[in-house]
Image (cartoon, rainbow, N blue to C red; front, side, top):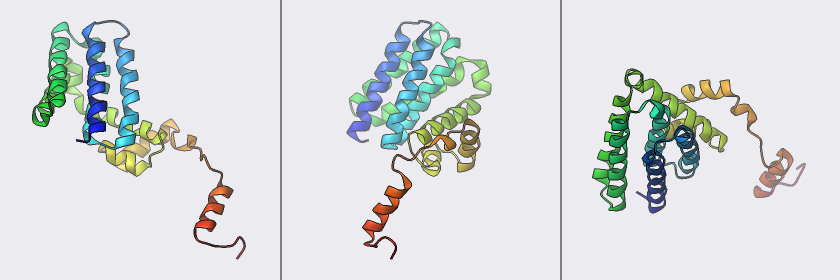
Length: 188
């Protein structure tokens, strides 16, 4: 795992732990904002571990309201264990901790348990759409999130994300740059 990715994951785990340590009504919105912020790291690094933790935080956001105090304590325990393992460079134990966290997410709510695949798929699609907004292509965003282009395109088309993309460099300037690169005189 790259050091910069490790640092971002550790920061994400730390912030998630601090949000969940004291149960407050604003926890849900803080988890959502943290998950949305983490997508920038996914777009930048295109790393599977980063994707996994980002989807996990988004899933915690979705179930936070319905977690019992015991569930929350279990999540916190496993978050701390995963964080400590990653800090110590024990990737096997870290990965085991992340798997345990996904298992706890499944158990926290009967509705989530029944529809976990839908929740995970929705999380991947939602985060894939945010990657599109960050400038990644449909294929890149879908590939990073483990989706088909079709799955992501269906949702992105409904949200109008694809149509809101604006080029930072005007077409004339891009064309002039291309002609200059290939040593072509304008009009020849």
